[in-house]
Length: 314
Image (cartoon, rainbow, N blue to C red; front, side):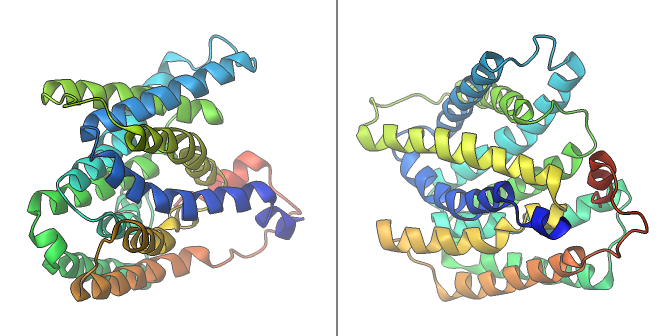
């Protein structure tokens, strides 16, 4: 039964959403910010996605007192960290001209930050994991030496900020009283979208002209595939697998983003970025190896679901 559980259809679908769909969103964001201001794009995306999910869950019979005020606050904090800060910073970075593949590669450092932040919640890292952190720092330095980020120091800073806030929010989310199931994602997107729109208004963003069909298609893709499907898949995996497994999209997303960027919009990746990709992904592999090892089988036949979930917290 445990073996079948590890390869259940929901897990396979969730990993596919993270690996392929999320990898493609970097290119779609790159297209979207050509027609939308970056913070406005993210705000509209998450506000619509969160509203649709919240309304659907209420229609399906979610009880009116849920989420509680404590759950609203907890989910709002995670929404701001992951979506307002994390995704918003990626959108602004790509708006400055950073290639979508390079943005995905920079965000591949999320497992490094996840490991570091987990230390504050009692995780004790192995020498192999610390070696991965050190190697990852080297990869980040190499990435910033590439021509793509040298021409946009603001974009480089934003991408590192995005990776750090996303990792911090991901680790913290496992210790907060979030709403159950998809309601957590709905509330996070509602709050994150509102904060992004406030940031858009405060920064003076405005539409120069009504976006063409391509701009609306990019927004629709980000709402339904990048937000409702992929983000819910990520939150699902955070609850059902180890953090290292949930953040393993960092292995695949850069390759998907680079390939799509080269094939569809003619983006280029220099030798510096290519070498940095090898170093960063090697670092992520080092970090993931100890966490992917199977724990010894417990003496009892099985633990309750909640206890097994807690045992996976770093």
